[in-house]
Image (cartoon, rainbow, N blue to C red):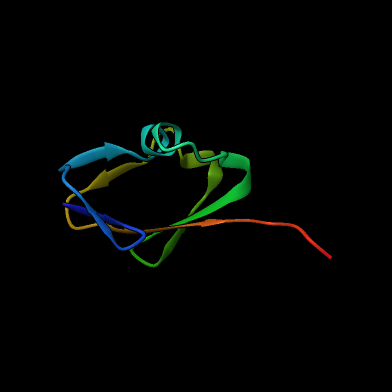
Length: 64
């Protein structure tokens, strides 16, 4: 099981890029942390999430 933004996802391995696309995230407007480490945007396509990982996805917003 993988925990993403506090929700358990029933998966042993999952591509980060696939998850982001399947859930409608704009990869240019988010930051991703896995197990308290920032995942560089350049690694999203190759990054595999494993059972036990804890992921936080934060949407970036602009404003003034």
